Length: 359
Image 1 (cartoon, rainbow, N blue to C red):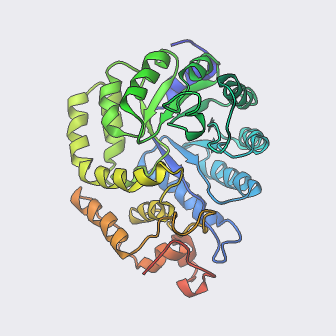
Image 2 (image 1 turned 120 degrees about the horizontal axis):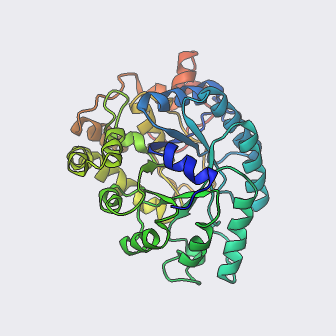
Image 3 (image 1 turned 45 degrees about the vertical axis):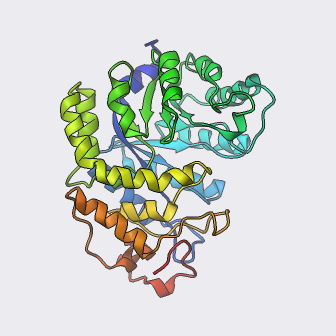
């Protein structure tokens, strides 16, 4: 693997499980809830995650900046903090990258916007290269079947573009999306595997690819769905993978399988549309001690958004039970308003609205 300051840093530090840290809001959804964000940073540390990617949705650029400031301040070097600079406008991406570097973020995630329609691969390369060159932060790319790029390659993954980017000193890794085609995953590893680290969101690929490539981390998805701080199965799984103990790792994999299948199926249909079941994801966090709380109403219509109903909540709790994890016993109202807000006496009737939630 070629050496650079950032690539060497990644080989030494980017190992294990990375959390996807979510924003928390005030009862009127008009401001960020700092106490809730700080609670979740501490919770990520309790889980044994090596990093937390600040993935805020339906927030303004200024709120995203504030989110990074709070997370970096709370981390105090105890966990790596990443800036998600996958925004629709490149000017916002550049501003967020600069701010993240300024306030203490350790790495960043970038992607090509799905709403753009480039005329050539060179145009895509120049766009991503502009982001990569704008910062000294180690960069994680996104390996997914981008609909905007299918006019240039049937897979939506531009191997030649990624091949060129992998040579850049601060490009250190790639997250492979959950529903990635196995053939695409193989091609990416073959072409880039000597230069960057891979983090497959599809756990079935981890032990297979780890035999031959630099697969030493997973994350930036709802990793809490497979563990609790008391029973950190996924962290143990990746620790065994990194030690080359694949047989023992598979024992943990099969233990997690009932819960993994459920969250895999839950997310797949939304990922194909460029969305996520945000309320469900927050519920996963809360079930094992996280802040929880409802997200802001997303920009898409309610028909496209995932509504967290009683059946969905029961399905999530049942999965934890199947893998031997005890969930929190607090009332559901605590999830609705966030753990931090509930502790302050705030209740559901104080909320101005309850988007994406149904009793």
